[in-house]
Image 1 (cartoon, rainbow, N blue to C red):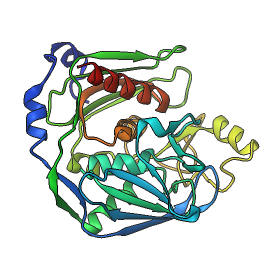
Image 2 (tube, rainbow, N blue to C red):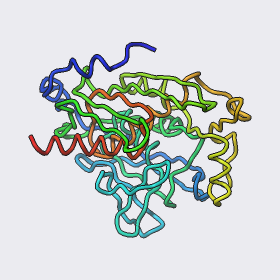
Image 3 (cartoon, helix red, strand yellow):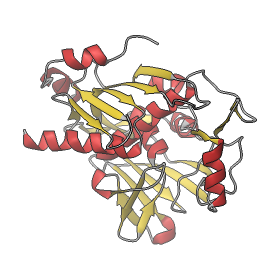
Image 4 (spheres, rainbow, N blue to C red):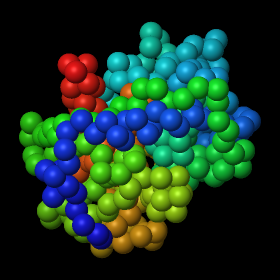
Length: 306
């Protein structure tokens, strides 16, 4: 699986100004034209017509609730609200649910400015991955805008965020590459999900080939509990990876370490809640959406103190 970032975390000097200077030379990017993705939300069962639209320079990423008179919810960590097993945003009465997959695709494909029109609150579950969003972006292509990336979020010093219970942890450090590098390890003792790890330097090519198609996963008992609570009633074992005691139920893994790859996908999306390119090295162990957001908050707080 390649080297793990543990050694690099301690070896990278703080304040990597060379990386920051180079990334500021990159033009902002958007889509060449609008493109749609349609599907049903996992949690709500409601169909959503998602339209990814070109954005103007410095407009960032914004969700538009067409069913709520065009209510706008900008992508920002300040707009994040707590939710189970997903990342949600809210401004006023306008809520956007399960944003991590589309944000992951936009971040990895280098899209800085985009308007995302929605006809419902929850983004489609699709096949549990970000593959459809990448395919949509590839269909229309990207173009440069008049304006450079002037505010990349560059990690300047190492920090570690740990869960208050359990052994979940996420570490971030100054970048060793021109972008985001993630090493994620999965280890659930006593679970049918085998221990695994995945590491990648994120780029459009690596994301498209090795990450985008990695799917959401959960245990059979978790799925049964959610459906008993009236959630995910339209979701089947063909729509995501459900692990029974003998492995995936009525499904096959796309990679032996697909679970770790999907967790990397989630990390990329959650770190894009800043609405800015994230440049740093990340090591995560059993980290979820809340811990990912806490790590992002810590990086933003450290930046504000400089």
